Amino acid sequence: GNSVTQMEGPVTLSEEAFLTINCTYTATGYPSLFWYVQYPGEGLQLLLKATKADDKGSNKGFEATYRKETTSFHLEKGSVQVSDSAVYFCALSDQGNRDDKIIFGKGTRLHILP
Amino acid sequence: SAVISQKPSRDICQRGTSLTIQCQVDSQVTMMFWYRQQPGQSLTLIATANQGSEATYESGFVIDKFPISRPNLTFSTLTVSNMSPEDSSIYLCSGGGGGSYEQYFGPGTRLTVT
Image (cartoon, rainbow over all chains, first blue to last red; front, side, top):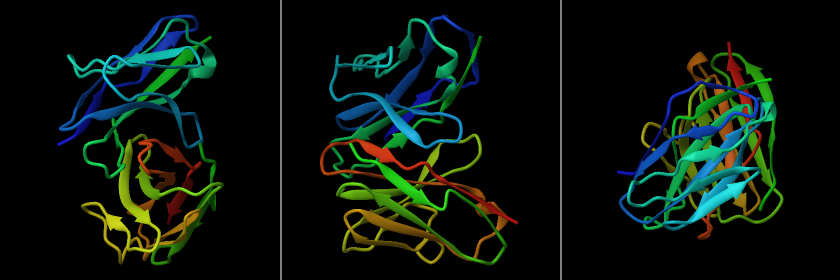
C-alpha cells in the first residue's frame, strides 16, 4: 500500500542554518507529493507540491524535488528563520487511485533558535 | 484555493455526551474529509464525505460513533458521539478533490473529554 516515511524530530537548528527534512514514499500509482506545514495552534497549510517526476515545488524559500528514482521528496531551505518553527508533514495523493485521499507522514517538528 | 472555517474552535465535554463540529468552505468543493490528530501525532483520516451520499469511513471508524452530514457542497458536520476521554483530540476538516489532489484545511477543533 501507499505510505510516507519522514525523518523523526524534533529538529533543532540555529537561525540562518541550512535545513533538510528527509521524506521517502511508497506508492502503487503515480502520486502527487506535498509538504504541509502546521504552525502552533493552527491547521495545516499547503507549503509546496510536485505532481510528476523531476518537478520542483517551491514556496517561502523552501524547495523539494520529486525524485522518482529514489522515491524521495526531501524538503530544503537555505537559511531558516525563527518563524519557520512548526511541524512539517510530507504527504502523497495517489492519482492512480482517484479517490483524492492524502496519506501523511508522521510529521517533523522543527525548532529554530534565535 | 479554498478557505475553511470550523466551529467550535475548542470545547471541553463530559463523558457520555456528544459534540457536533461544523465545517464551512467559502467555495464549492467536491469532497470533504474529516481527520483526527492526537497530540504530537500525524493526521488519521476518519471519513470522506460527498454530497448526497453516505460518508465513507476508514478502518477503525464507524458511523454510529462519528456520524457525518454533507447537505451541500460547502458544508459538513462531524458528530463525536457518546464521548470518552480517548476521544480527546484535534478534529480537522478539509476540502478538495475533483482531480486537483490538493486539500485545504480548517484550523481544527480541539476537543477535551473529561
